[in-house]
Length: 167
Image 1: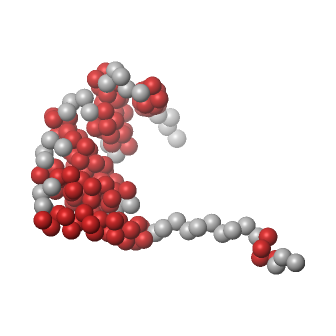
Image 2: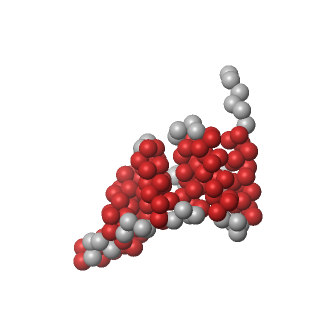
């Protein structure tokens, strides 16, 4: 005869806390950090460490590594765009926008940079006009953008253009 507990559903695993996620990132970063001791200005390694911390929502630590990566390689648009995201998540929208503008000075067509610029202008600066401008630039400069991504950007533009209803 089965026990009463055998029929009950399995408990849902608990989501890891931010502290758990930090410990996981620290553990995964150990071999990369060891390599950085011998090559502290290796932008690729610095970027990899930044990505580990960003993926685990450790935005302050991630931003520090992305900053070191762009210091070592100022034209690294991907690292600079990730740095901007981390700054945004830390509440520094102006710093994020500045980093994105620098990214665009190196790569004016970069779709990720233009997308993020629009999102930050809309969400942090309440600037739908600036967001639409960034997204229109994204579409104009990237005519071969995947159809699903193009549709998503067009939807964001349409939403940003809708008048706000006062409550």
